[in-house]
Length: 485
Image (cartoon, rainbow, N blue to C red):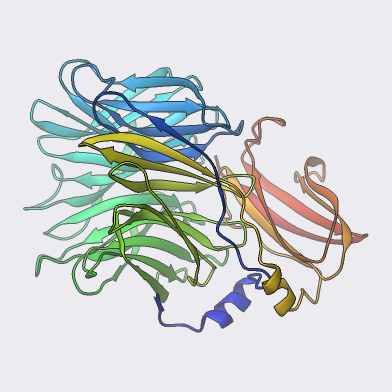
């Protein structure tokens, strides 16, 4: 791994990142497979507010004639509660690329539908049981696809994808499409030059705008660069940035960072044996550092943040194993974990769970048939050697939550310089306590608490500004955070 452009220890100090322990590779709690006699593929996974999981992808085994979009809902043990397919049964091909939970406990999904020689962007909203509330398609005479979707603070949705129909000239454009709560278009914007640009992922930016990643090819060669694009709430461009090397690189996921900057993952198709990039930028998209990891191929680049401000990524190895890479906040690799099944396996998506573990959506291939593979990893242990070798915190500290604003989960980190009774709670703007997060005696050390504002026990929280307060033996620190839904 190579890290460029900044001294990582300085960055870690600026971000308040804990260095007192080192994460250890977690154990596999359980695995589950889903599929039939044909090929079935997962592309997205998320933890639901009740601790279960949802997988999104496509099925040829259970489709109505061709492939259908497929949603699988499980309990916390990975056992199936229900599955739903979405397709018209007329020989069309539907697939899902991204699934997210909505503020009413249902789901919003995007992907594509191929019918009559044309591919359109697909958007489906369901209730909590996966029953369709509405379906929308967007596109024209050529190929148009959705790759990511999020609910916006007004209850509508922002969809990121790629369009050829609305591209000027030969090639494709990044496509950002905003709708109301019923899927009706509010605005549609395309971005890029005269050649090939592709949109992979979108996230909410701190100013109610959007941050988008994908790839940019200026037509001068066969290679493309990672592209980062920031817009305002109306989709008007604020700035764009490109990061590239030899060959082709494509951004695949993007997150906000606690200091207002961004971190994104990317596949490096120009690497000799395949590779993965992790790119850290400031609020203006200026590159702070790039961490590179060799030997990662296929679907590389799914990204989530960890409890201590680091990152988890997934893909597959050149030997056909599912691969997970865990880094600290500076992009330094802490561990790699490989898993194999069948003839080959690859990771499609990874999410951190509220208990500090991970859920992974992958796929396995045997005799030309693909099945969905879901892996549950336990929480990471910590190295006692690292704790002994590194000094404990020297002061009581409460950090800014990350990400902020957030929807629906955020991580709160704090430090104790000595054992203490800790009370961590969330308050509304009237000063009323609405959630108790921690109330326990804890030893000295660095802590990260992941809070899901849609926790089933207390019901869904409303959008707005909240206070989180840490009381340590009567010494109190308070910070604010914003929930966007």
